[in-house]
Length: 321
Length: 122
Image (cartoon, rainbow over all chains, first blue to last red; front, side):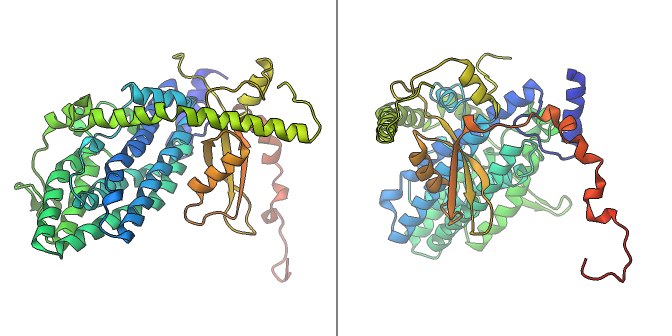
């Protein structure tokens, strides 16, 4: 079949909301873009376990510890769903991890910020997971089948993440003066980086057009960011916390909140590797991979021995593959 | 195509391994754990559905990992794991030719038959 015909069929599927599946023909650039997006999404989940993992041993109660453990466990699982989806496009797990460890692949820059207090757990669950949900719900209908299905599974699990975060902030805001201050301080530090999670503004996002043509992306960065602000400001009012933006103002004409200018220098700086925790995050991941090598090798050796034992017991000789 | 993208499409694995020559399974191992596809039956009475994939050293480990990752919320009573290389898949390019005979046999659908309204239980 000619490439033109295959391409025509591909665009017919895109335009008719028919999913593209692993063995379907797809443009090389579509494949490359998806591998990059899905693998970086996966890396974000795994690296995202680190800032919250930091507080598991210091959670203020047994319930909070169990809940935080469950959340971090979920993030690990999300990473797996996404790595699986990426592997259907023809890249291996080892290659993707190598890209992460050598800095060739990125992960969401939000995870390059430190978690300084327990209230950060609340702020992250509420704001960071909240922003992620806003991004991920439309992705449940993204054009690539395995990615969409992974997103459906992720979204089901993600809602408890946001609720536990908001609950933490709610409790703190009803507590002592020290607790209220801690909650406000966490909001002050996590608000702007959360807005940056939606990526650069539309007029500075060259990939957006192609991603939207291919139905990988369904809403622009600015559209999602605006929605997040509108929704979250109302939630902040409920717990009596102040969003750290003096320019925040309801605009009756637009039907949306106007908000202040984002410091894009900070955003690009963190993306380039100069955020507070970039080096630390990567070192932790590299260390985990390198120091875990003996476990991976041992598991394979053990599996090999188990297989040989079974075959001997069955009275068969080991068969050459 | 850039060389780092090996197109490992479902159904390719088995053929490639057979063609690539033999490796004694018990003695040597590749440094990466093999890839397994996971199927979960969420409730007795339903069939197993494809849930995703994972890497594991062997079947026992694959099942344990599948339980850890895919059934955290009691979503499974039964787990099947199959090494991805043993899944053979039809080629979507052949879809037209493969499924065409089914396309024009509309008499397989109940709506094809025009029967009187008074007829009951059918």
